[in-house]
Image (cartoon, rainbow over the protein chains, first blue to last red):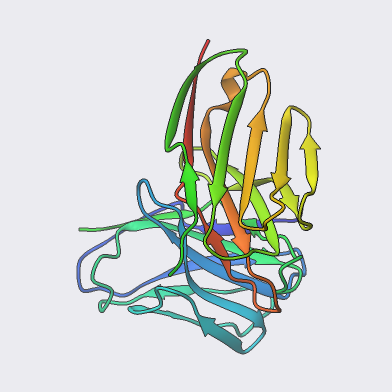
Length: 114
Length: 112
């Protein structure tokens, strides 16, 4: 079964701690994305990567970091510098990064910072 | 960052009724997408539109890419309880970068 997996589903952390969210895809997609979703809001782009070892900031990159060492993996680190980290985080991938390439989403990770 | 204007914010309808929602933008998009999200899950793609004026159906769902390229609508005919969820529109300006812009969603509730 091809798809995108995110783990864990729920994550709790204490304020001031860094936390890394996992995203893996076996769709052989070149492009991967991280979005943040807050209640009653649409999705906002944090970072995206069109190819291994390259990534670009999205609209709300401050307080986050990413790496793209392997095609199938795009982990997101929520750092202590992120002022309001509690949110639902969604990872997506697409065949390439163009506007005709549909983005497919993982099931999401709900992060709660206590 | 830019967001799309999606309306209505929420809808409460009776099973069997038709539903219509739309998205507008101040700028032109080359792609319009409609996603559905169930609580606690990731969005699932319903319909993708790539051409101005395009009208596409997926079962009981129909979506159109506006002629001005600044709007899109989604219709659901004969709603059923499993249509409940949040529907998002998303647009892409074009080019090689995959930045999707999302609306804030329309929350649909269906009374049996």
